[in-house]
Length: 109
Image 1 (cartoon, rainbow, N blue to C red):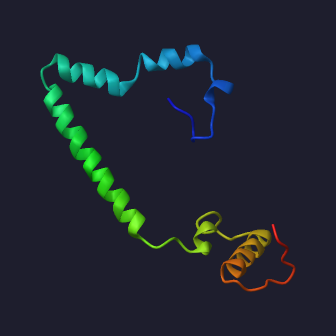
Image 2: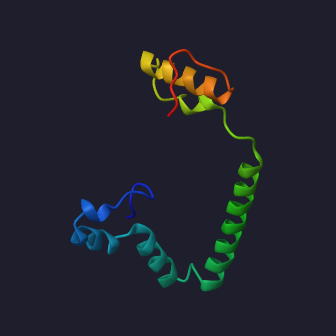
């Protein structure tokens, strides 16, 4: 129900009534209500699961932060089956700048 990214403002293109309509039909909220109504979910369960999930997420973040930064080339990978010439040039430039070397035709940005 949120924006596509942290820089996205869905209020610029989404009608508030549409958001309200779908908030009332949120499947996660509806499922939680059903689980509670049928006695399959208690507050203690939810608190325990939330703590476990938050702990798992924290461990994953710490593991990710301990990794070395990705290579410059990874920024260009998996975008096209075959990179267009201008993208190949941009990658060469980025690699050259990252290695502290001069790239012919390079200009400071």
